[in-house]
Amino acid sequence: MGLNSLIDIRIKKSGKSNSPFRYAGGKFYARKLILEQLAPSDYFCEPFAGGASIFFATKASYKNNHLNDLDKELINTYTQIRDNLEGLANLLDGIPATKELHHYYKNEYVAISDLEKAFRWYYLNRTSYSGIMKRENCYWGYGAKYSMKPENWVPHLRTVSDNLQGTNLTSIDFERVIDQAPDGGMIFVDPPYYNADQKKFYTCNFETEDHIRLNECLKRNRDRLSFLTTYDNSQEVRDLYSWCQVIEEKEWNYTIS
Image (cartoon, rainbow, N blue to C red):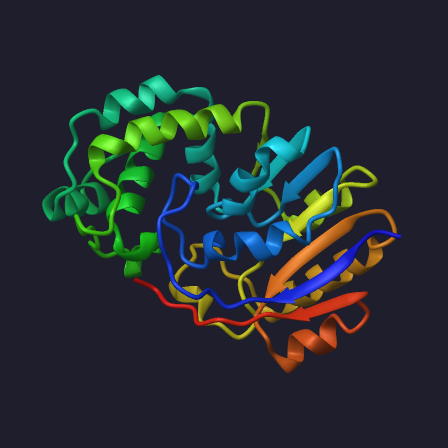
């Protein structure tokens, strides 16, 4: 039987991570706790990749890696970083972080190619408040004291691109990802929290029925996969996952800054 664990986590504070993106709900500050719980395997997968902080922290530990997210623009940006870094670097070369350009790329710029879409997405992500990409809440939020400087974007992306080589990138429903994972795989599951107002942050909604689907999917795969999922500490979540072997309660404050 696989290692089935549930950890209830609230982020203590936000900050820069090994991820190429600023991402609401990212797990950079939970890395140490999460890494201690991951099972060894030849295969590692994040069905809800987001900023993928855990993937970047574990890249050397797993032979085969799979990042999936229903946000197609996010996955396209990962793909361009992996496969077309020099093209992306050319578009970012010399571009400053300004409120005027943020407005332009959000409201006026017409991206035609996948590369241009990735450029637009990356620029807005790096210069928006907490990296929130949902259009109605995607506000200017760059600050020189706490944001990565534009001249460091491309050097950082070169390291990210190296880490993404050989990684499978998809944008499909989480059930397909988990059901098709090879036996013995390690799955890190970081869905939108059950009671959080996640509709403000993410372009893809996750409803109550999706939390139920996720629970049922993990339950039917529990004898062939190891998984660890992070969730908010709520009675609804505890009831859903009462069948898990291990439930650990670790809490800290989650802030957006």
